Length: 274
Image (cartoon, rainbow, N blue to C red; front, side, top):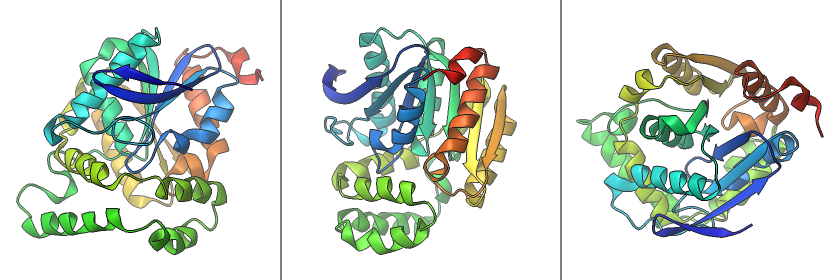
């Protein structure tokens, strides 16, 4: 699949299948590969678009100021949809990708049919550490050193954590070997500055929030978010941690498909195609 020039950068993207358009947006330290099980499943039923955000994977450099990163990535996505001739889509975002799709939906609400937020978080300015806690800011800054450590340094802990979810382990392991440290730090800084929480009540499209039962923090964040959205529902996936769509892909795919059918974005007969 091609790289395409949008908004002054090169974006890598893939399209699969035909029909109702669903765009999957990956999270931090990840790429379009994090949705491989969803591409395989939904490409038989819909038009699936995956991409590498600016600064990730095979896309261009994150050559903008930190304060402009999230807005710039939203404009990148908007121009990509324009060039693909997709006036309106369903957006599925995982983790920090869910912050991006919320920001996109606020800015370009007429381009979004529905939002699906997977293992998302919903804190306001400066992330979970607040604006005045210098200790946590220092700890966060120190953690950036880990971005430059070789992938092999993390393999043992990754293997232990995901020993029950081998497909998730395989994809996450591959992502470790393709990280872009400096740009990842810039993205992390941008995410810590993102003020998404006030956006929630203004989003009027259908919203589905998903989290894995064994990730208690994500479940709590999901419950808080559902209370703030105007039109939201939630789903908890049993026997799953972050990322829940990789730990239990069949269950996640079923939940997403049923949501699309309930919102009349999908015809019932498409459930059995392919």
